[in-house]
Amino acid sequence: MQLRDSLDSIEPEVTPRVALVFALVCLVLVALGIAVWPHPPPTAAVRVRNISSVTLQDLSVGRGHYGSVGPGVTSPYQTWGPVYETSGVSFKVGDQQLGFVPEDHYNEHPISPVSVTFEIDVTGEAPQFQFTTKVVRE
Figure 1 (tube, rainbow, N blue to C red):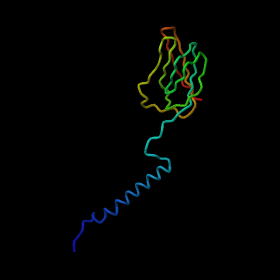
Figure 2: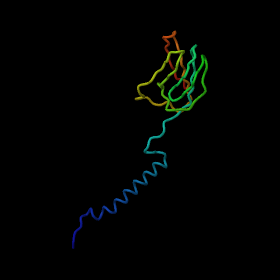
Figure 3: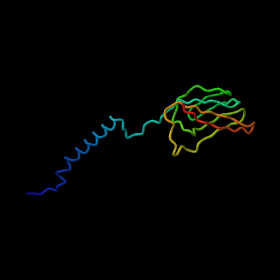
Figure 4: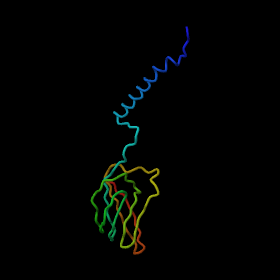
């Protein structure tokens, strides 16, 4: 009588079981909406309100392009994302280019999928314009 190694008799039966259990666990996770891959970033309805006394030309906020927004005017909503409190802003006032580009969004969470308004105020005189932004959640 020849003795077999104990692993020789167990391995062929265990490997298919492990694969089957792994496949079933993956199916259950997907069915419950718990995916292994990342979900798409949240989007929000975003508009811009110019609270200054000058026209903001070629205005971009984050991934949205709003064109020209006159003094006291609020743009229509655009849906894009992810939206951060410190989203990049770029526009011209006359011949002066103004803007803010965040270095990164480390440790900052996107704004939940809601409606928000970026209020932009321009102060000072040409060519020394300065601006501030404020995010208003609605």
